Image (cartoon, rainbow, N blue to C red; front, side, top):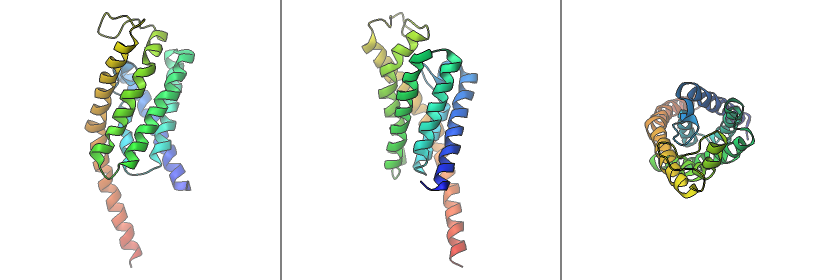
Length: 192
């Protein structure tokens, strides 16, 4: 990696972690939990522009999830989110980079990765945090992993899709215009 890419990855990691923690402060469990609107996930759209977003987003997610262990008191169970939540973000960003020529399809990467991975460990995390029923139902988490997975698949997927297409897509479009303008200016400067 070039120095510029390392710097970009660091800035992206810090921004992702900070946005996640701010979301937690203002939206409570919507940054974590069974229904997620993690605003920082909109930054996955940066993977449409630079491959440095992949390690940056992954590191930022890991930092935010470690901070959540301390703030929420999930203890060792929170490590599930550090490992698998960060893996979901990494895979989503990687898919976004690989499919960058098709932005609408590319932004589905984080949606699918999070919707498929996060609900797999979420019941354990929720029980460790003191939840014993599937939210908004009276269904016990004990022995209801398939129902909880389905619930999480839908709610995490809807939340992630909302963030990616309502916030991430406009962010990408705005940054793409700026990126193109800087590229055009740089090319004009070298052609003189």
